[in-house]
Amino acid sequence: MFLNLRFFSASSLIAGIFIGTLSGVVNAEKADREKPINLEADKVSLDDNKKESVFEGNVILTQGTTKITAAKITVIQEKDGSQKATAFGKPATFRSKREGVEEFVDGSAEKIVYDSKTDKVELFTNAWLRREKDELRGNYVSYEGSTEFYQALGGGASATNSATPGRVSVVMQPKPKTQPAAPK
Image (cartoon, rainbow, N blue to C red; front, top):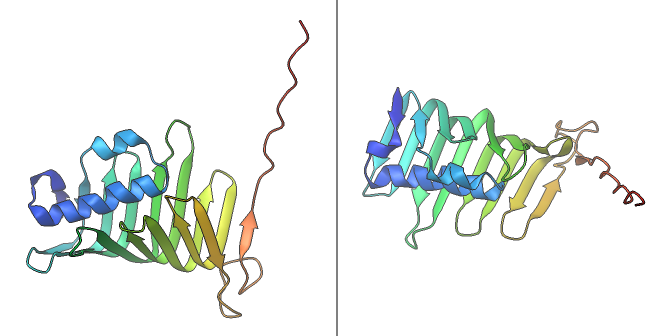
């Protein structure tokens, strides 16, 4: 089933806010927020009374350069107007182009939660976040968009998401050295 969310009621706005605000969290291109949100799923349930939307079965949400894939995405609108969205998959993934540079941010986990009130994305179970060649892996990875604060937890001996099971793994590339100005 393919749906273009421009033609839905208030429930579709909930899904739109999810993808639009997740785009902001990973510093996506600002132009993405102005583009239509498209959804593909095998099943969609929209409950305006409960302010809950559920998208199931090979879910693909796209808006401009941002793409989220999952087996299931639920979006709940809170009483204060904020939204909490949860994507489930084995894995659930997202990809978004960063503003002003030819660079993408990618992430993956079995569960991805976004809270628009706190501007925070949390990745649970076999989680990783990558920007270019820099990478952060853990059983839990979070990113707060407003403060650009990252956190990762290893998850104990049973977690297998890094080179050393149960530990956090970070790869940071050296920053290019600035070249001295050429003499005149």
